[in-house]
Length: 124
Image 1 (spheres, helix red, strand yellow):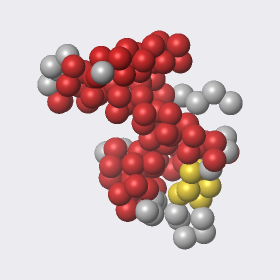
Image 2 (cartoon, rainbow, N blue to C red):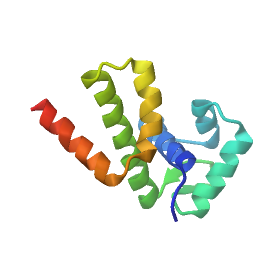
Image 3 (cartoon, helix red, strand yellow):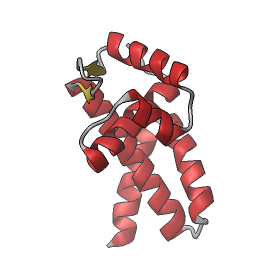
């Protein structure tokens, strides 16, 4: 099933939090994103039913293989775009972060691949 932009943001946040703390609960996502607990609860339910996450009896949220792959894909896009905007184009950190958050979802796979190739060549 295709995942929406908000779902991608949740998966990316879970990935980042897992890297920081190793243990992610709904409250951690709510605190990180500034969303209400009911909003997080609804999103977690959707991500679980779509097979992107599992929720342990102790409340720990774990990315499935599919969820991890999607989260890593989104995060890679975010990091590369943010870095390119800041380091190569001179965009402020704040604007680069905000723009990367939007751009990571809308670029086609072809465009992202070409951008990645371009940046790699630029760094040589």
